Length: 78
Image (cartoon, rainbow, N blue to C red; front, side, top):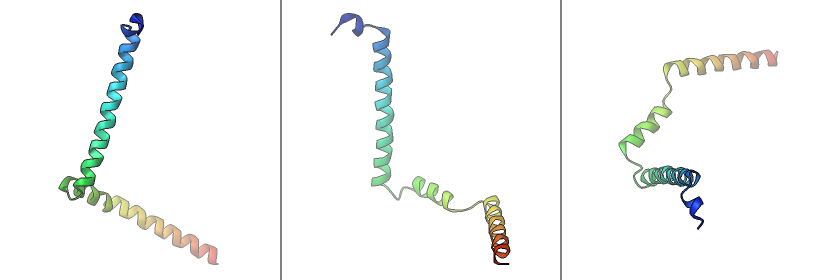
């Protein structure tokens, strides 16, 4: 190995960034494994329940869209 390259700031930065990338990638896949092996974990279940339920504002918006859709269907039928 070329000694100048081995001690350069660029090589150190490359090693730090590359190593940090592997750490982040490993953390991501470790989280996926935990989710796969423990699907009944209360933290995971609570997160899914919150996404399934609509907030009052979301319900109001869905009703508004349904009314608008019904009005446009009535106009198209006439």
